[in-house]
Every structure is written in C-alpha cells, then in structure tokens.
Image 1 (cartoon, helix red, strand yellow):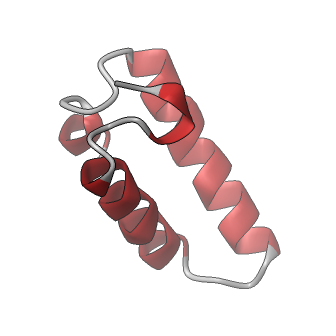
Image 2 (spheres, rainbow, N blue to C red; image 1 turned 135 degrees about the horizontal axis):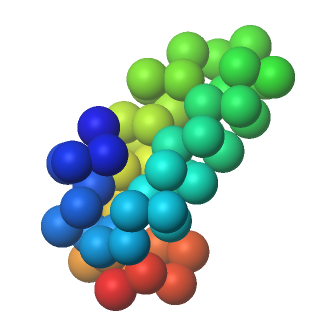
Length: 55
C-alpha cells in the first residue's frame, strides 16, 4: 500500500507513519484497518493529496 500512496505522499517516512497510525487506530476501534485505510486513501485522492497537509 505504501507504493500506492507514493504519488500523494512522496516522503516514505510520512507514508509509513500514516499507514501505521491508521492501522493502530482502526484496530483499537474494532474496525478493519484495510477498510479504514481505503477510505483514508480515497479522501487523500479526492482532496488532491491535501489531506493532513500533504500536496
């Protein structure tokens, strides 16, 4: 998944941070991390990569 995000979040450390954060928080909430991640990526793409300040 990190490779797919590269276009929207060029920095590898930031991509991994986002992936780990989404996975941890989704798991704590009892949600499937892959579904939350898919939703998050959709938001990043929809907003032109500007979600969380990335562009």
